[in-house]
Length: 406
Image (cartoon, rainbow, N blue to C red):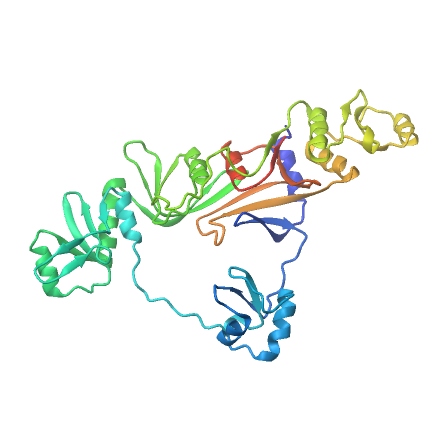
């Protein structure tokens, strides 16, 4: 295995720029030599069921003479045939698009938070009073620590109604009071609580994780993260757990996570000494067979000979006269692998892979790791020498990365 200090020197010399690629619905940001596009004077519109191009143009006040531009921008073969779910570029400045603002109604996040602390939250059923019915779908009922209360998020219940509910031994709290109750309960459960902060984990590979609340479990001493949204996938939760951090969040309504080891990406671990690993790497990405010799490595199909530095200049000349492309192995696996694959030829590039969670915004976490991207004929691979935590392997596989470890 290549020593970390040597690898760090190699990476520090690479020049990188941002670009993007897709794996299911997440962004894998790869630092390559592609410059980002300049902002364009159009917006992206997702076509809805029942939409026609004419309706969309009227909706955005786009004049009829812009029809040809829309056809050109979207490469439409038939302007009368657009499909629900597809995305159209519309020639209009994003600053001119009017977006309806949602009302500042408090959401149910703190109700989910109370559930994380063991509260029972009822959103079905009703409480029948003398002259009216309190529907739990609108005013949830919460049972916590032997107490019951109705949640009136927007403070819309009449005073007389609140008094009647309280006469039954049931409290009434608004959105602000619910938030305060959650924070007080959180502090009593975990002691000192940190809110809305970032954790930076790892030395060589870096995971930056944003949490809603974090405290310490007094019984185990481990860090506990409490999130109000279920936006940390199971493989990422496992990775955090390997750092001694337990994530508590609402249960996901739809199963979107893959369990460790069942991801879409492949994993190949190269074994043996340096030369044996190089031979296995070449076969994996190109299917060209090579073999280790006394002089180094030979790939007969490609007429390539990677020789040891003990091979004399005369022997190198002789190999070149026999038609071989000859280069001297340096002992640095990353350098030797790049040179060998270049001669086959297979393109490689040193990249900084960035995985964002959740994919659309990356507000929850960002994972950085450096390695070599290999553009093989059948698929792309990402090659690294080692990890800070072994749990990073199933996480990368889950994110669709085809991984080579040498």
